[in-house]
Image (cartoon, rainbow, N blue to C red; front, side, top):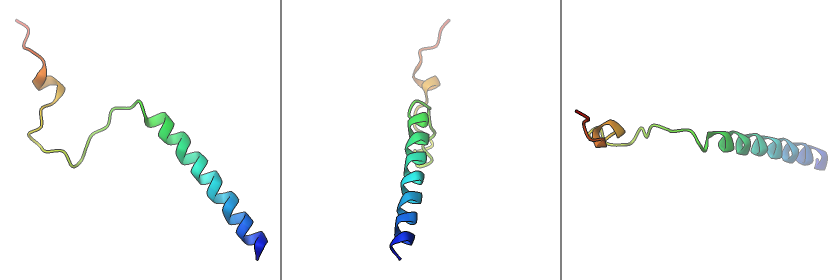
Length: 51
């Protein structure tokens, strides 16, 4: 039984390491907040119009 537990722990550690690597890659990526209000200003709304 302890071999099974060790195997599961090793697999969990591998999955955690992979998830942490993916999160590190995604840290610099702009994301869209699906819960944000529709009328929230975007970058285009906050820039002054250039004439």
